[in-house]
Image (cartoon, rainbow, N blue to C red; front, side, top):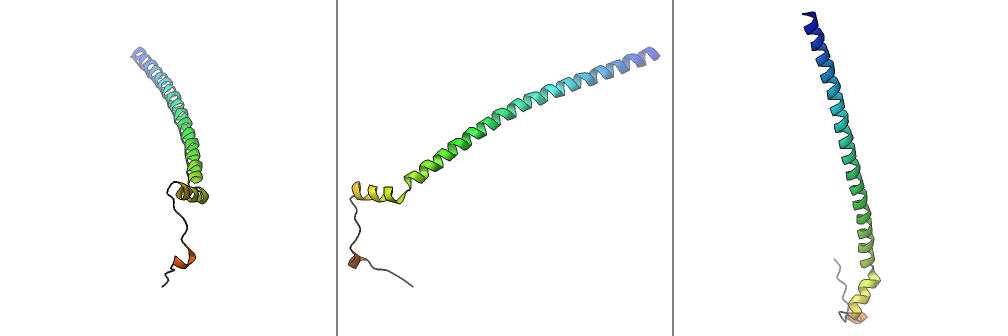
Length: 87
C-alpha cells in the first residue's frame, strides 16, 4: 500500500512538472505572437501618420485654388456680383 502511495505521489509530481513545462511553452508562444502584433501595430501607425500627412498636403487651400483655376478654369467672381445673405 505504501509503495502504491509513493508511486502515486511520483506520478502527481511528474504531471505537475509536465504542466509547468507546457504552461511556460504556451507563455513563450503567446509572447512571440504579441511581439508580432505589436510590430504590425507600429507599422500601421507609421503608415497612418504618412497618410494623414499626405491628406493634409492635398487639402492645402492654395493647391485647391490652383487646381480650380488651371484644370477647371474657374475664376473669382467680381465683387459687384457677390451677394451676401444674412439672417
